[in-house]
Image 1 (cartoon, rainbow, N blue to C red):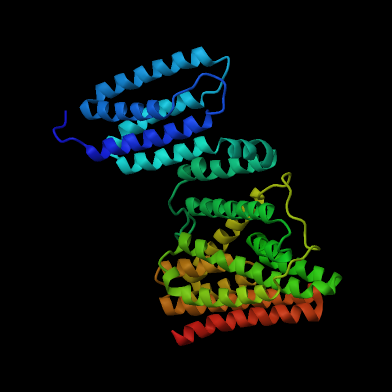
Image 2: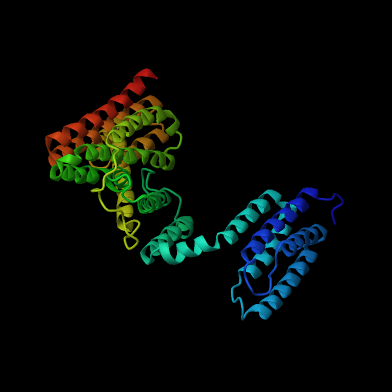
Length: 410
């Protein structure tokens, strides 16, 4: 038994118990059935848990068993009127949180707030689960959670190739990253809808394939010249989304490089954002938002993205071993014509291995942006004609110039 009274843990236990009890009491105030555990019961249960654990662990176990017995008796008496288990589980959890407050009061308080929110948000949560989330979205959500929480911890986190760049854990992290970003874009588009027309669709399309999005908006501009300004703005925003993917890719491959290149990334992002803002208009003729029946992401696309990056990393490492850093950089620049993120990962790896210093990495990043801009400008001219293509080319050229200027001025 402790000699010093734990006033803070006891106060935390009482506070979280009263909070959870108040929410439970508000939830059942209009019900005709006999009242369940409310403000006083939850407050007392939390205090019992805290005091029992403070006295002795065995006392806490006894209190927990006793609360379980009371809960079972209460459920047996009221099962015909309220077959749910929420109230009973909440009371047991309140007791556990009271015991947790003895050792970790901050964590117990935070979990108490989470429990209170879950109890209070009964109707919105039921509506989301039953009405808003489709079967396809639920399936994708389970795949994403399983990929991140079940598979990722089991994947070997070590290099398996002679050059030390093929790491299965890194490959799977990129797969999870692409799936998560695509899922967020799907949800955002469903929430926003067509309010901002091509702009919203353009931004989130950049997380899937910015090159394909530039081509798609070019076709729209060719078919509907009145939408050319909006299409150009959407093309700028899709490249902004693609540029934002540089951050997680560098964090995964070479986290130390990101503080060195943030000025170039910020300058390029500013130009793209301004270009996108010029075409930010409401567009009732924009692409329809995704429906609940559509998938949030394509697993094969996410896997292909990660495989391409890993393949480019291996090729670059081989070129570096055979031809030196210039050969690796040349390979990365060529790769940037088709997949800029794989090329960025290559630069990050070379920087992490001290093949490039910070200055060389910054110049290499601008070179990759230039190669990518060149390829997308050609796609824009081919898909949307001169009027669309030249405007996109100008915007991308200004993006590269801004990044170059950031190096010169720093």
